[in-house]
Image 1 (cartoon, one colour):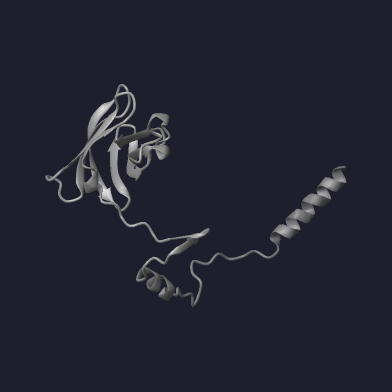
Image 2: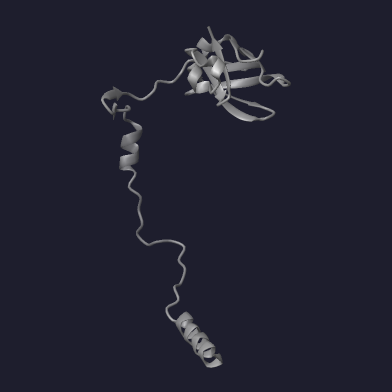
Length: 156
């Protein structure tokens, strides 16, 4: 048994000494072809085939259409107002977002909603329907805003 162990160790030592690779910091003559990336940046989105239906890329939303009061479940609410002191695309979100937590938080319009931060994290407020809120009491609503599954606000 001892002889096998010694033989195996000698073999491993011999193999370890063979063929070391020297590290290099760069690859000679390496280039990056950015022509495809540049061409893609200048293109408009093409329609995508989804089953039998053709759709195009989603247009950016206009959160200015969301100004006003939105109703959640069990007395929760969201009131969105423009914030002219911070400029175009800035909003103040007054909300009762749990049974115990209320607050007013600054939000900024982004391509697909309003991004805001409150004590429990950073969120993206997006336009959805009642089903997407994950709340059975809002299930049949069509005009809703969702913070996260289980937190949404709708208009009648």
